[in-house]
Image 1: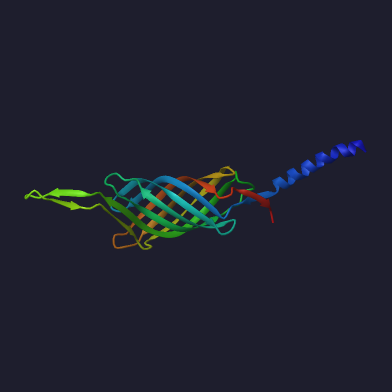
Image 2 (image 1 turned 45 degrees about the vertical axis):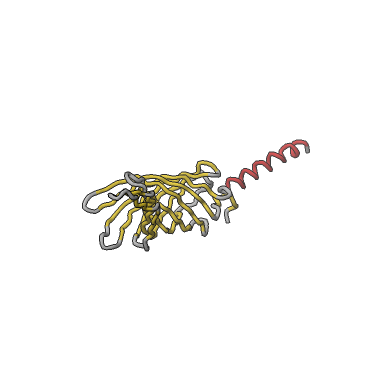
Length: 201
């Protein structure tokens, strides 16, 4: 009887470990992240610029998500910023056993470009001694959807509260001066509430 009682707790622990191994990754409804990398345009030549920006992921199921990302080109002159925005569908092709597993995904979507420029106040003297003041102002533009993009990548958990992401995509800008381009990005995603485990159905 003593032998049976001593084995009882051990059997319970082994059973709980078995349940833990039988648990799968459960992604939260929302993930926020940031990314940086390179963007290239292929027109009469190849032009490559560094980019950085935020990303918002809305997980509509365990393998399907809608994402909104903005890639801002690192400015090399002037006070303005500009870049591309993307609205895309993401499909995770494999569900790992836990948050530390590799999760490959494919993406497809659309987008456009945006710009923002802030012009400081300017004073211009006149020959008669007066000064013309041009007040500070700002201007912005958000284009309609003129981009078609397709890509893929993978995610891997760093811990329960962050995951690493690497992706690449090609895109086509469709307008009178259209061109082809590509993006290579690395970033971090932070789940709202953490990556949780739930029993496999």
